[in-house]
Image (cartoon, rainbow, N blue to C red; front, side):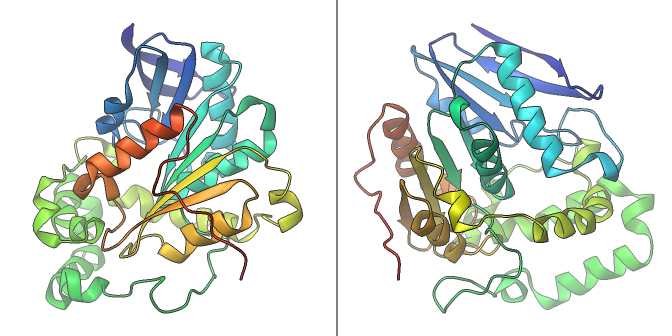
Amino acid sequence: MQGSDFVTTHDGIRLYYDRLGNGPKAVVIPLGFYLQEFRRLAAPDRTIILYDQRNRGRSTAIAPNKLTLADEVRDMETIRAHFGFAKFTPIGFSYLGLMVMLYAIDHPNRVERVVQLSPLGMRPDATYPPGEHNDDQTEVIGAKTLAELDSLIRSGYVDSHPREYCEKEWLATRKLLVGDSKNAAELKDYCEYSNEWPRAFRATWPTRLEEFKKLDFSQTKLDTLTIQVLTIHGTKDRNAPYGAGRDWARKLPNARLITIPGAAHQTWTEHPDLVFGSIDEFLKGRWPSRANKIHPE
C-alpha cells in the first residue's frame, strides 16, 4: 500500500506524509521530504511513514512560538495514533536524533527500537576532545563565499529574494554534508519549499537553541530507556559532532554505535550500502556487525 496525504494535529497543523507498505512492523521517519532515499528500507513486513514536521517541507507553515520540541514529540504521537501502530521504530536524523529520544522517554511503551543518524548532542554547549569534532567549515566553504553570503543577508537579499538566496546558500553549505566535497553535487536542494528557505531558520533557530539548553537528559532519566538504540555517526561531521553520537551510545544503557571514518553529516550519501544495510539488519532485530558498545570512560 502506498499513498500520500495529511494528518491534522491537535492544534490544526497539517502534516504531510508518504506511506509505503502495509506490513506489521512500523517505521516512522520525520523530515520525510529530505529522506526520500530511505524508501530503500521498504520490505513486505514493514509499513514506512515518511512525514514532514510542522513548518518543514510540505507541511503547514507556522509561527516560531508553535515550533517547539514538545510539539514535535506530540506530533510524532499523533502520527502513531493516526495509523494505529501499537509500537514503531523512529529514525531521527540530526536534531531529530535528539527529538526521537525525547519521544522514547515520554512514550517508552510505544517504541520498538530507535535509530539515530548523526544526532545532535544532549547539550548545545558540550565540548568534545580532538578527533570528535570538526571546525573546518570556513576551509570547506571558503572565506570569500561566506563573506558573499553574509553580504546578501545584511543587504536584505535573503528576505527580498528568499528562494534565490536559498539556492545560493545551498550551493555553498552542501559541501559540509559530505566527507569528500566532490560528492556534494549529488545532493538535491529543497528550495522549492518555502518552509526550507533560510530566512525561516533564522527566525526560529534562536528560540530552538534556548529550548535545547533547558532539556533534561540526566543519567537517571536515560537509564529508564532499556530499548535498543542504534546510532550511526561519521567522524568528519561538521553539523553535529561525532562526539555527540559517542555520548549517546555511551550513556544509553542499550545502545551501540557505528562509526564511519571520514563521513560527514549525511552518511548515507557516500556510504549507502553500509548505512541502509545496517538499519535494515537492526529493523530485523539484530545488531549490525559494525555496531559497537561504547563503554563509560
